[in-house]
Length: 365
Image (cartoon, rainbow, N blue to C red; front, side, top):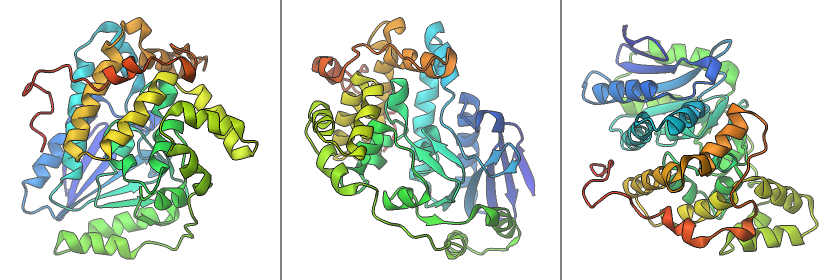
């Protein structure tokens, strides 16, 4: 066994299997710029190492391995860096999205054990996996509209490939899924009971596998049975979230009397009205895009989240303030209502701020 890094990212090689443990449990393994750089470094190193057959990744919980995967990016850092106009904020998103692309296009099996919280940036480092394993403790979401952001890290790409209008629903509402819903949405590949994970991990690191495919096949053989019903309220969801505009969606929901419609309308009314419009356009554009083009679009979008307006008027800065800094949970959205959004401002999110060839993710293919 050899240790490559020991800090917030523990990277170990056991025989021919490379193992990553995200090791920032007090922050639910939220990704810092340093963690993104460490992950990128080891994954590139292992990809070029013929002795490495496969990579497995998990999170460290507060009581030991597993229990939490990754809660996303470090949003308090986003807030501080935006106010300080720190270039590290731009570096974070450029390098994180490049890492997401690396994982999606990785040349060896990459297996993600998505136990516990899997949100935002945690989805970015797991959705590109060749196997995405969920448990009865999985809590999966792309909740960015709650902080005036959008489902980035390739969210446009993977949400737009969910069945029907599930991607629009998840991206706009930030709905949290358990294992069965994640499987139904095609955002996970198999279920393993959390109580079995430690033994499975130990078996993985002690078995002399001969190929990466054998590693992947063995993990797949460990999948347990889980009844996967249709995604909840699927017919209503498709009827509403295929509508052309956010305004038509909210009108449809608020004119209905059933509990699902009323609850969903109430959730949308809490989210950033501007970003609801932006996210709808993002997901629908991404449906016609490859991964690299989607990530370049999202890099443009996240630049505008912090620079389209003055920092003090940024929806993202305000959303993070309300949720994670002051914790008053009363963001002052501008505008405050879905009906008042200027569609020209929405369109501005999709204009690249970089000249041709100068995009920070120009090299992705």
